[in-house]
Image 1 (tube, rainbow, N blue to C red):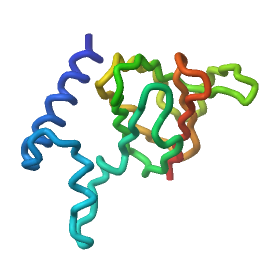
Image 2 (image 1 turned 90 degrees about the vertical axis):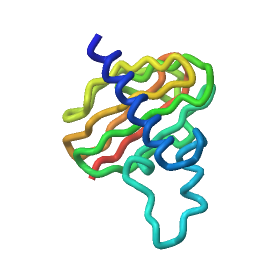
Image 3 (image 1 turned 60 degrees about the horizontal axis):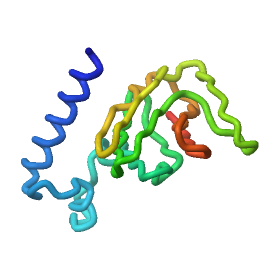
Image 4 (image 1 turned 180 degrees about the vertical axis):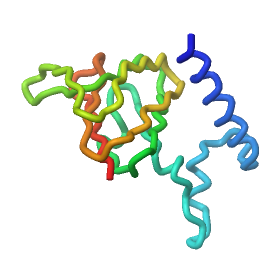
Length: 141
């Protein structure tokens, strides 16, 4: 129940942010491309990973200690994100590195979820248990 409430609260806050930016519901990252060079994107925008039907749109990200990541599923596909990785042999290995937030996130399509916070520096691995080869590496500095 707590996860549902936090998810709904996150979506509501992000919706308010999008409306406040005056983009009429447009993708919040689209305004980054038109920003003047002196305007820096926010940490939240930089700490966003998009998921398509069967892959992370970027498979690694470096963040600062204490930060979280927003996972945004841009497709109707189901994803279940957990600690571990798909090996080159096609076998999934569940493992939680020391200091990693323990995650078991279900994205039901066209939604979002917060991964973290990451309170320990290191390299952490996550994978989608549904889609073979769908790996994400988070490097925390």
